[in-house]
Image 1 (cartoon, rainbow, N blue to C red):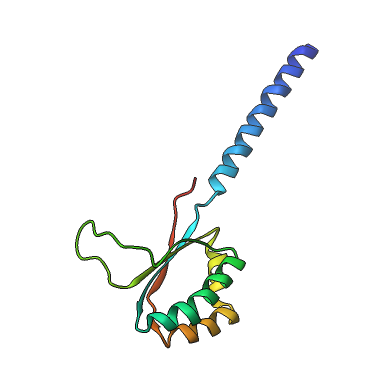
Image 2: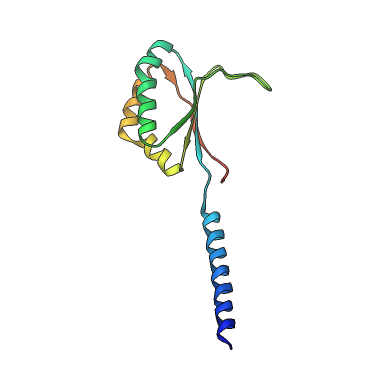
Length: 128
């Protein structure tokens, strides 16, 4: 085999291996995870002053990104919830769970539970 053929074959094999590696990396990418809470607030003033700032600060510190926290709800179909809606974005379920289960957050939740009933869950997002 001539040297040019060997070089060409090596280049083709290298490109194929690179393409396979890129496909593998894309397959491993996961989308963000969303934390959704529907909080039935019973004492708005205390909730906003004593609970929300602490909860938001800890979530941001641990990697959460707030997409909404009590924003205006516009009905589309059906009856809109009367609860306060909170939507956070996280890089992974592991990071979200680390925040949620942390001793700091559990203490903050005890404060919040005096002023609201919490209903929350996590939803996996679509990979980019």
